[in-house]
Length: 340
Image (cartoon, rainbow, N blue to C red; front, side):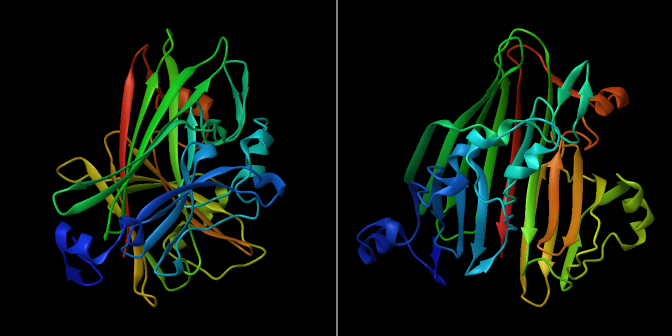
């Protein structure tokens, strides 16, 4: 294991520490400062390599703030880690609890724009991020000279006469390194085929995002989502300073996979010499959404692997891009988020 610029064996590290919590750890706790975040369960993760982040257990193990050697990486909204008890599914009410963070998961039965599908009203971005996790488990162990930290749990998106979907999530880090390994499995526990949409809404903010930042990706095709995005497509790679008048731009990017079927995208701040690399399975997540929102106070770049388009479930059904899970069917997603 490489720690603090030096390669050390398990035995050498144990001689230098009384507990591995001195180097890297996962600590479970609750917020108790009052307001809408009161009593929200969280886990704080330290990798020992400079990366630390907060997992929100009561929000399906999504990831909130993250920083690398004291530099913030994720954009955090003004809502804070709102308790799921305040969630309302109607229309765009989802935004009232959208904390941003390193990861907000959208889905599982529907995602994207609010609308009506098959006579049912569907709110923005689905329910899963507002469902508390159960069967939360922390595991800390050695594999050779590597110390592994794992956090796992389940979130059930269910309803009588509706879908019965189970999300099983595992987050893993290796001490001394700065990569989050995320593995999700979505299973249809019901007895009817059900629609399945998922968006990994990753939100990066200042100072990682600034006019000094450069985004790179193996893009094959760009599809603007709105008229504003289409009009400004010539500036798609440009990152501007925050402006109160800025109107969000959203684009779909169809990506070229590597020989293993994975896609890697990079966002780097050339001035800070700090960046983020997202590597994901492009076979399961066959679309990528870029959200440019450079407004004052809402200054964020969203990088979002997905299995759907952001126009909502009815439009995906119409386009033939809507995914389904048969009874007992499972789909696994793998994503790596590296900061350096």
